[in-house]
Image 1 (cartoon, protein in one colour):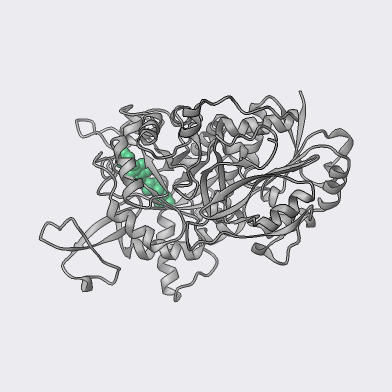
Image 2 (cartoon, protein in one colour; image 1 turned 30 degrees about the vertical axis):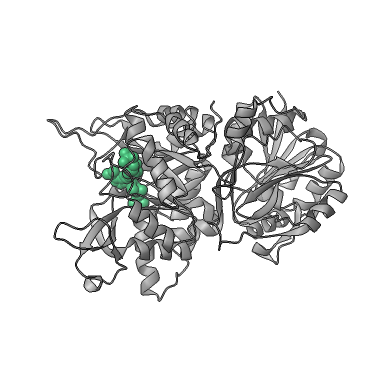
Length: 552
Ligand code: 1PR
């Protein structure tokens, strides 16, 4: 079995990458230090990176990897960089001006313009090779991108790179074109995450490992029209996320459950926790149905019983072996005191999940505490909140804020200190105004903090995405709370995932067309097998919205 060497500088995507390579039938050997770097024994090398540019390249240099990587490249053997692994091939990045890169590509990365689109770019974009195809990159397929900085192109830089012998595959996010993949001789690198890009991404890894350049399939004109990027949504497909609320039931089994307004118990005698299936199996099923992401929420973690919750780590490990789209895990991402009394910081809890195969962590209760503190300190953090520590180590894109709001009607905007909105849906006592109150501990406790205030504080503290639930709509099958989504989209620049209330495919279309939701999440309708994820995608496609079609 061919061995693939992977440089390990504790990057967040290491486990996912290892899983993808093993799934393709190769063996992975991690290279943790220059001492383990034996060029004669290596035939394929991968440099995966995620998160902050400076953190990554400084780590690479301080651990002494620069020289062996350069010697390896000089030897002519194939190397593949992924995400920040691609970025490290450049001269530098404005993200970390003091940190030089490996300097194979003579220009610097810059930040996406967030005045026209959400930043980071999170989602499925296309990759258009400018000349002959390399490693089977297919302009009709979609690949998963997650980044704020990029090698942003203009005519001059593009010409210069081409005259230097680089082949480029371009992507366009909003109005900005950037390098999605690049290849010259033995160097190949992708800005997207092939290990998280479903079947299309696995093909790219396999083609690199086999050093083959297959032609793209013979698509019919109709297929080309359907699959082609029309750049209507900044270039991204409409992202569909399947969500699994997981907890231990009264019999002690870890099950996927689903509530109505967060009540997960059956209404009839017995009042058992609803059992809708097994977490790993359901995640695999939704991946096969075409889910663009899978989210696991450990909904009872707040009961401060970390041992009971550790099965979630195994769920992640198992799911990540066969589910090659991004996995998010939430519930209990906070500083904890373990059963033996030892204190475990949130960063370590998150690291454990990343090492088990999670790509993002979602923070609920602690995000509310962090936002409250942010305002107490005069609109700043003190660097200690889980949002700040995890974002610093793993990048903003790895930190999702899960919000559990309830609508509160008021007669006048002065009835609360929180930002109030005029609503189309008048309250029970004729109120025209409402605000969205944050809750913690799975909706059990309400706080004097609005969603507008919460999401802005979390964005400032370093969160990369908002998972916007809605207790009033949860399990209702009546559609998303569109006003809530609009309000949060006005509050932040980071992507917002609409959640709670999806019951039919048309609800997804409604949210995408009537709000600026960046992704839509569904739970109950998938668990009850009323619709598959693919049904939703087919529906959106028929109604002119681009989706990723890459079924397993
Ligand atoms: O506070 O950081 O430990 O995180 C706890 C996490 O668990 C939070 O993300 C919180 O949203 C979640 N949670 C806690 N209790 C419940 C519950 O249901 N009793 N679930 C819960 C939240 C909401 C969505 C659901 C959508 C879509 N569930 O996950 O999937 O509402 O449902 P639908 O499509 O069927 O309407 P912490």
